[in-house]
Amino acid sequence: MSLLDSTTRTAVPALSAQGVTCAIGRRTVLSDVDLSVVPGEVLGLIGANGTGKSTLLRTLAGVRSPAAGEVRVGDRPLAGLRPQERARRIGYVAQEEAAPSDLLVAELVALGRVPHRGAWGGLGEDDRAAVRRALRLVDLEYAAAQPLDRLSGGERRRAVLARGLAQEAPLLLLDEPTNHLDIGHRLALMRLIRGLGRTVVLALHDLDLAATFCDRIAVLHDGRLVAVGEPDAVLTPAVLHDAFGVLATRVTHPLTGRTHLLFSHDESETHP
Ligand SMILES: Nc1ncnc2c1ncn2[C@@H]1O[C@H](COP(=O)(O)OP(=O)(O)OP(=O)(O)O)[C@@H](O)[C@H]1O
Image (cartoon, rainbow, N blue to C red; front, side):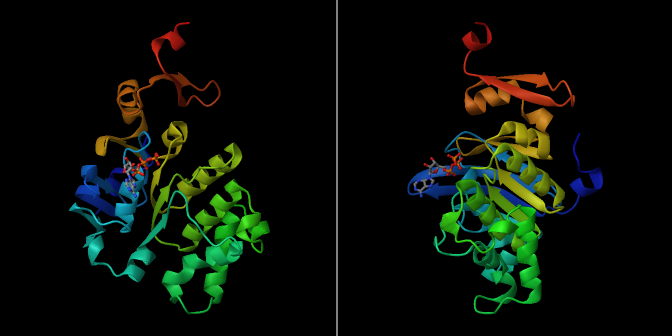
């Protein structure tokens, strides 16, 4: 069952894409994408490698301009927002973010406060509190004073996510936020995202996490949106076969009663 009620569903979308097409060089990598995200919704973006998830997130974040179509934040065109205004409204965490390795974790997270104080303003008490809050949320307070290059891959990922959280924007766009995280931190992060009460669009490769924590799921295939809806309606064997070329079987968790997915490549694996 969706966590959204019907009132929320009829609200002005927090973010929408209308007819969004993106080209890289001469190649069209996103074609005519229409997508609306309602306030408070957690929307998972899934699809095979190279199907355009990162390109769509970058376009929704305003980092890339569409070749055609429009992105709107609330009732305003994204292209009309000044960078600082955009950064106050949208927090974006890319799949891989390079940062100077000698930067301290707390300094990286404090970069999330730039939209609130300007690039040259010092940190105020509000900013410091937001940094501490973000570090606590990703369970990384202990590393605040460490340089980034002393962290593990998963810890670095959590530090970058904390930077996005410290921005405290109502809209969060996260590109594979669970990458590099162990299972405990993956579940904790998804629970955290779920509990933020913000509007979140996130690319995920783990379909079980998507099914468990997202209100709706959008499936990209070859740069086109091929399905959007609640997890049970979208994560069907037919859609998953078309999108990923795998056979999916739904099973019921013996303890929670939730539906989970098992995958195989072809029939011979399911009928040995
Ligand atoms: N800078 C670039 N130059 C050329 N082609 C690019 C560039 N960035 C992305 N592409 C191409 O655009 C397509 C979409 O890439 P994108 O990164 O959006 O896919 P994705 O679904 O996020 O993939 P993944 O799951 O592997 O992260 C791919 O075919 C990719 O090769």
